[in-house]
Length: 275
Image (cartoon, rainbow, N blue to C red; front, side, top):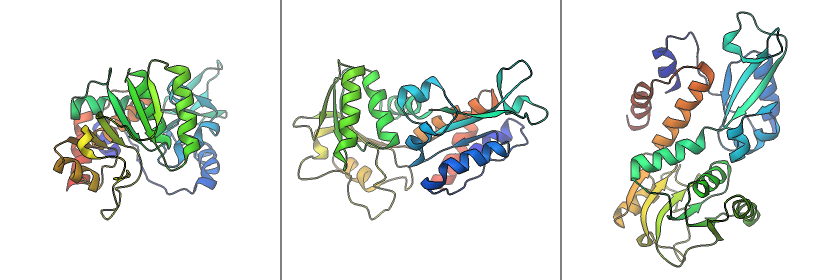
């Protein structure tokens, strides 16, 4: 997806994937900065950790509390910070600047793929990691009326619930499964990456018959066990491929300063995921 976008923009760049252990994340960011990388994307579980590892945080990263995109910048002769792409020669003083492109991608995908009106909606959110936390805060900012949070580690959802109550008091936030129907159920966990995975919720406490729509952030496989079950239950259902597309397109715009060729990126992404 990114390399297709880069080629369409005529840039002599290359997007590469590296597996980095969480214990080595800080070293990896520092190393990429030292080697004058233009930027980075971060995936699970690095998004929360990186908040305390970058030199500067964009307002998006401060608002949503996670970093999934880093742009490396240099200080010019006048003392201004500029993206490294604008320098002919590598500057001596550089910094890492963290952004979050997930939040806007989540809501855009929900609205386009499921036609969900988030204002006043009741939502069940499964997972409280980087993507789950960002989703919870973004949904509350969009005016959902009720937000039900589920996570294996209760302390994580308690922290998110407290933050929502402070920042978005009009959203009623609860820890636990809803007793009534919900407009939307979202899987923000990694359950579903393996085709043999179970469903990401306790079937004794919640039934998909209580959800009008189901969104699974997992995009590979294209149809997870959750999405199969949701369709069987008569729910509108979608996976996270559009979220992946839009967060990636925004990241490319942050690095390049140009509008991302979204359709080119979508075609490359769908070909890679769906074959």
